[in-house]
Amino acid sequence: MKVSSAISVKRAQTDRRDFGWRTVFFGFTRSRRHAHRRAADDDVVFLDWHHPWLFFLSVGTMLLSCADAFLTLQLIDLGMIEVNPVMNAVMAHSTLLFTSTKLSMTALGILVLVFLSKAQFLNRFRTGAFLTFFFSFYACLVCYELVNLLRMM
Image (cartoon, rainbow, N blue to C red; front, side, top):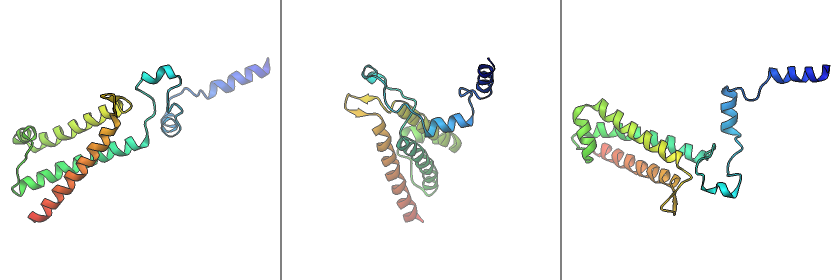
């Protein structure tokens, strides 16, 4: 009896189900469910683990979106115009509204694409591939804006 009570006391001291920063770090770096358990679960889109490449694409796209907003404002100050009619209408109100709208729309789009990254679009493409497209698009757009900014200076 003394051995079983000692084991139960030891178990009560460290409960693996307690949530803390160790749990978050361990779950992020060493999560176990990278694929479905059964073939019947192949229709399930959501997993508790996403590839680190999606993290890179998400953060990179968000940083490029911030650079795009900054460079757009700089170029407008130098005499260029905003081609996007929606952003032009928002920019007419204030630059704060422009930047907050642009960044929140980008963040919401990234969040949805990461959440649905395992889903199939038109039964052909994984929606996670769209993150690669948007990252490439923003990279080209920022390069274009940098070239125009250097020309105007």
